[in-house]
Length: 165
Image (cartoon, rainbow, N blue to C red; front, side, top):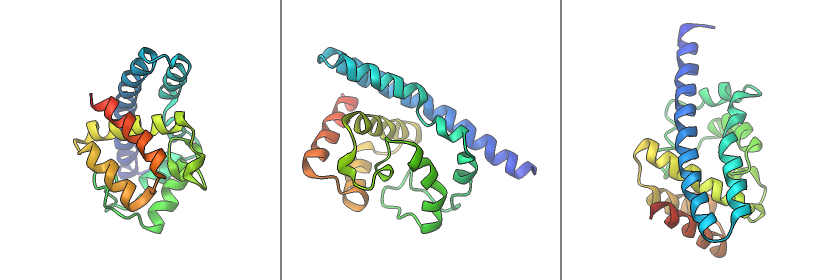
């Protein structure tokens, strides 16, 4: 393995570890709200998910696929970014392995509440990590990518507001 490839892997690992810290903090905040609102089982399940969030990136060569995302892919910081087919091929293994991504499902309506909460915590964690506008990202992605049904999007907004307060 060349030094350039090693550097890319180490950079991706650094980002992943930092992201996992933000996700754990976000899920912890959400779980406290869930506990306080009588949803203890959901709170415990969320914390279990937080502890293994994105661990698939350490398996099945998933990290190498993610390194191969196009150099111009700024989908984490630009909600308007439209992924290329090549980008999608690089990240589809990650989507397949992680229920907190809407792309995991053939129909977003199949997402369970726990999947939605982890997704919101993931988005919030990335916004904190990258210094982006969380709610702008949520609304833009709803408009140009996910198109969640109204009832589902209302649930997403509810959990977004919990994290913001």
